[in-house]
Image 1 (cartoon, rainbow, N blue to C red):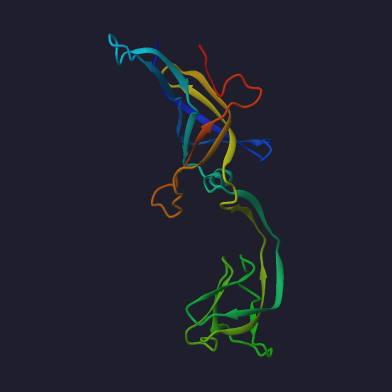
Image 2: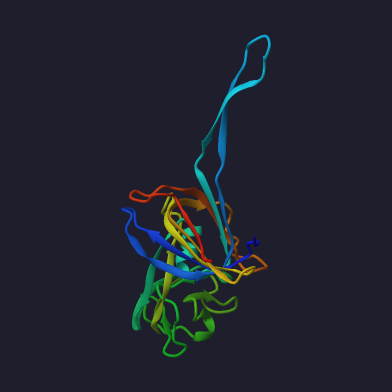
Length: 247
């Protein structure tokens, strides 16, 4: 006899709309992986005088198996699931822009340029008549690619300018949020029972899940996200999930 206290690596394989594997992502630091196997009891009560209210027959019927997964690792693929989104690559190549027309709002507000990661050199601005505008008339956030008029400069009231600048390459990932209605995935746990030191593995071939809590992007602690839903019996499988313990 022994207890069960697991340390484990959790992997997710998000499936396409047609059920095709996209590859396991992980290991993920899962702070909760709980499986609930509820059931419902159907009774046949007696209406006879001598046994009124007693149960003559009772049948237990299994209900859909439920899963809750909480994790505080946030690679793009996992965060996208918590936001019901998809992931696409960001590949901004380096380049130059010459005399692009920008409409500046009044001083104190920013205009977003089409590019980010701007070079701090080589930026120039002219008015629509091609007259040079002094750099003191505007300020630029080079990382985000935003421009604003200065309060005491010639552009304080806003208006149109022609802006020339260079931008560096940017690569990364972008989450397209709220474009899915549900998440279908495989979940795999590669664990160790700390009570015995022996391996424990849990394979869940198919879950249908969705976020159960808001994702607080400005949380004071590490962002934690939660998925909840049903464990489905995948076609061709003999059970909806498998839990293996060695020894």
